[in-house]
Amino acid sequence: MPTTSPSALREGGSNQGDTLPVKSRPAIAVVVILGGLIALAFSLALSISVGAANVSLATVWEAVFNYNPELQEHLIVHELRMPRALAGALTGACFAVAGALMQGMTRNPLADSGLLGLNSGAALALALCFAFAPGMPFMLIIVWCFVGAGVASGIVYGIGSLSRGGLTPVRLVLAGAAVSALFTALSEGIAIYYRIGQELAFWYAGGLAGTKWLQLDAILPWTAAALAGAMMMSRSITMLSLGEEVASGLGLNIGRTRVLALILVLVLAGTAVSAVGAVAFVGLLIPHVARYMVGVDYRYIIPASAVLGALLIVLADIASRMIAPPFESPIGALIALIGVPFFLYLARRERREL
Image 1 (cartoon, rainbow, N blue to C red):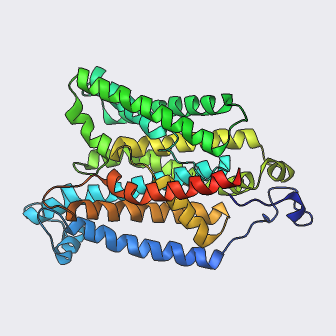
Image 2: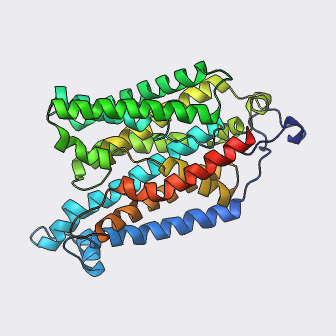
Image 3: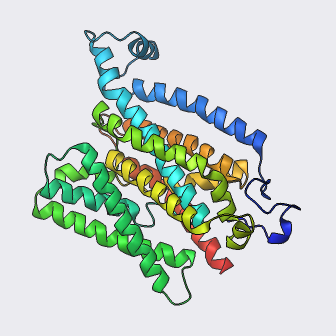
């Protein structure tokens, strides 16, 4: 993560109301966000039209703005394709913003909700819900996903902190990999013993098939509040990304900021996993791309990450239906094809800097 020494602070910059001493590109950020939103709108339209039964874009437009439940194509668009596409955009934004928050508050370029065990913790909570409380309302499942993600993060940070030499980025990722492997094994064991593997297969692979308006309505309040909270905290996250000494000099309450940011990460990761499954690498890849384009100011990184993360998931969902029709490929596997090489590059660079 880029850092700035206290000597780089502008004269008089001793409180949160002053200009932050960070390099940012506001004009480019506006172009990236607006361009991303336009691309996202076209991608959503394409996602709604592509599938086992292709629907023309003109029909999609008519079904959205002049819905007729008596037409089969309108039913396909309204009841199947629209919630799927919108859920993909929403969960992509959640994964990306969760990764941006984690990278900013920990100053760890390898931070991601999937790599640090939060996704696997939420998936284990899902397995327990399916095994011991079948038929549980989706809203309660989301709450249990929060709990699972929180337990996983606590264990990962605990293991990383106990390591000799302190909590370095590489040790944190190694602890996350160990906890993820453990929780995934427990989830699979529960699935086999209680014969719920078919129900969990969707979340293991990661995908949007079968997403309904009911699920979208359940996650929308949580994700909207968490994304808004992340935007409100963007200035504080920028201070944390500069280092504790600089953040303290700017008057930031570091402990409170980290707790609030962690709560937002748990909400974002928990709701996204409950809807689309344990998709990794979105929160690792997208914040780095956003940071490269808009600079190190999180007032621009967070909205850019939200737009680009939404675009990535929607495009991956389209690709999952086009690779081997009429079958669908797992979204998680497609994104991993990009995410794994990028992660290895970052890990190698981080090792050289230690």
